[in-house]
Length: 509
Picture 1 (tube, rainbow, N blue to C red):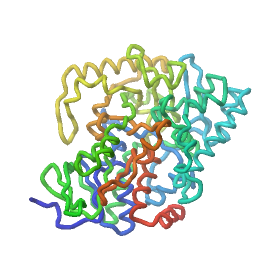
Picture 2 (picture 1 turned 45 degrees about the vertical axis):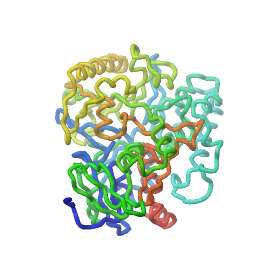
Picture 3 (picture 1 turned 90 degrees about the horizontal axis):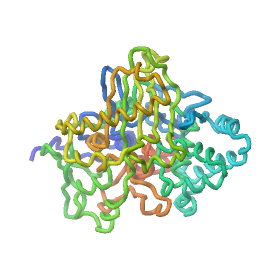
Picture 4 (picture 1 turned 135 degrees about the vertical axis):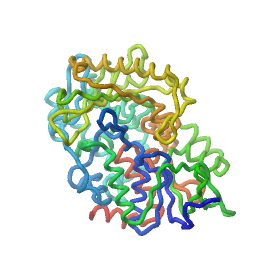
């Protein structure tokens, strides 16, 4: 059998999403021999971009948080050695997110707790106590997550059952009888596919706090994160191979993985293996028989978060102003209601942003609109597969379906921007099938495995597996998003490196 290299790597990492790249960067900086294997023609997972009409579109990363000086993601990027090369644009001080409703009323999230609080109290003058209690609860909740606060000890969420089981929707409802304020506080819940029956408050708190401590856009696309990390990895002797799909693994008599087999017949040998793909897919790759039946059934039985329909518009040159904030538009009064949508009224809730570009910062080249979509809607085409690496054809009815959905999104969008059609040059879209094919989640889920407040332990995935030298990383381990996945990479690497020393390096970066 042909071998890519006779070399045995210290770490073989399957998948080049942010989790895989971050693990590779951490381990390579400690002198480990690292190789990253990516099935697609482009690295980065949700950091991938694509181009239409000479316009770059992000697939998953529209803005990032915790990027003010000294905040956690700022320090992580500094540690990785990529901060100075990142092209960033801080969102508006008085509004980084706008929560907007069908009646035209809009509520601005300001940067930092003081501005956030001030904006909300101006809109709800009789609700100062509720707003202050909410802000205090966010901070208190975040204090129970050590690595989120760049520490390794002290208060820990794992010992706090009440915190893990606190439901986001239910807690916010206890703060006030003002229904509109409740909905404003939860108005950006598309960031975590908020489910009123399931989403824990800690998920809401960690994400909201992140954006309140520095909300920024990545100028000219999120792929710069993957590019800069890959350069760092290679500069430290690490390897990244694209178009290398891992299909199975070989084991020795002790039950350790010795090498992974690629689709093209090559093999890669290693001492330790890290999977950055969905845990259910990891089980398929490394062999169902290698995992305990109870573990396999639990992981494969976990519910994934809902998927998305993503519309990208390109604009006629200099026709639409750049918006230095994001809009969460709710055409229903209940911001949690869009998850179980009525297909006749769809889209009922959606996210709008104009990507930041360097060539003419005052105008937008494009707009991205993201809304929920159940995979059941595209089930009839689920047998098809289409990527740049493995091109395939989908039925004509699939493209007709996309056009019909695009038109519905545009009709809703006109309520926010009445003259927008006159500015549009072209319309493009991606369905759950696109995300399934490129990202590798079984059903194209938006944020991986759904977290549940009723059974928090069941939806937590350990980085260690029953196979002694196979570990997991990525959005299903800690939390989704740039910050959540970066944290998960450090948690994974704690199995191989001294955590105190590593976290100190991040703080000292």
